[in-house]
Amino acid sequence: MTESIATPNKPGQAGGQALVAIQSQGWSQSGPGSTGNQDNFLDSPEKFLWAVADGVTSGVHGDKASSLVIKAMSCLKKPDSLEGQAQEAVRLLSLVNDELWSRREDDKFCATTFLMLLMHAGQAACLWAGDSRCYLFRNDLLYQCTRDHTLRQEHIDRGLLTAAEAGRMIKGHIITNSLGADKDLFYEKVFFDVYPGDRLMLCTDGLSGLLQTELISDVLKNSRGPAEAAERFAELIARREARDDATQITIFISAVHGARVEHYGGLEKK
Image 1 (cartoon, rainbow, N blue to C red):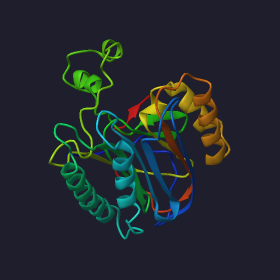
Image 2 (spheres, one colour):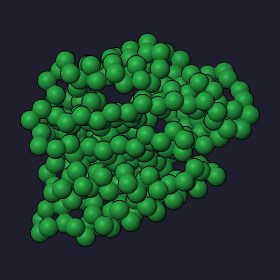
Image 3 (spheres, rainbow, N blue to C red):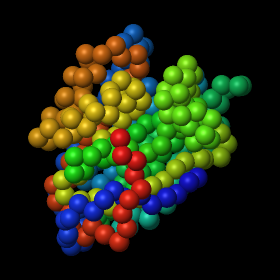
């Protein structure tokens, strides 16, 4: 598990003590020729909780694995504190990991990627394993809040290849971490402040693998609300030669009170 603090530049808003205005919209669709959707998602703004999961297709019952983690996350209650909710999420994820590990058949495994976003009192936390992503659009800049757990990213992190070179890897998309693929739970966690005007998007690789960051930025910038943004993302996917299931959740924050402003910098601008 890796934990870090990450926040973009100060946007200049101030406030009181709680999130007060937030809207979100999600959808999921099967890839062409698919016999079933391996993705699942949770859109629960009343709990300040969102999650996406993508069943690992090289395993067995990927749809059941992604469904299991989303069902577990839906049991989270509205938070008293962000850290407390994150700790409870990790406890539930550990139980899900144990369950998926126990379901493995011979050398095959029942696994899924997962990504969740939690919010409380002007702060957000992302927890993830795999290659689903969380993007944040703020002040005309797009930030990627998560780091892919893939062979491509591993080569970049180790300095073996540049990002451009890794982009040409034939098997660079191979997942290096997922829920249920190992006896122990491995995940990353990042905290950052949220502000009025922030727009976030969670997605599985079926979307991020097809849309360039410039397109993602354009949709988040020019949509009047999360429903419009979600519709535009779906239209963009429909125009492309999709090969995988795709899932996304768009989140618009229009008012925040109590955003903490002690630290800034750290997210990767895209």
